[in-house]
Image 1 (tube, rainbow, N blue to C red):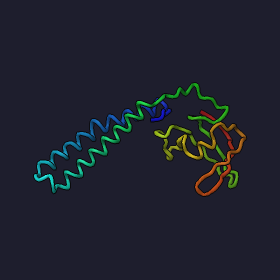
Image 2 (cartoon, helix red, strand yellow):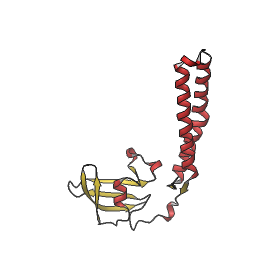
Image 3 (cartoon, rainbow, N blue to C red):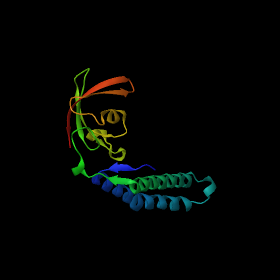
Length: 156
């Protein structure tokens, strides 16, 4: 698995998520399996099958998150510059066609949240902005064609 760069906050949130799945969700599913098993014949017990499937999905998710945690590398915010766009920068861009401005923070995939204007570093827009400086224009291929964004500001 590839190395994932994340902030200390993202790392802590991931640990909390794993803890919640292991201490709350796992026992809940175990209880459902036990209750379904107590209802008798397992060969025709849809509740039991559903609970076992949910258990398998939960264990797969826990494994995936633990892998992510094991391969995480924390990013020191104090080492982040603003000379050119890089991970953890807040970037204000302007669409050169309609002059609409947007500000995004470039983050690790595990920390992306569009409601908070945090976009994953591996998205087409983030990839197109990487390494650009204020005043430069990034030509970015999006699903409906090419879009030009001018870098207005880079901050932390």
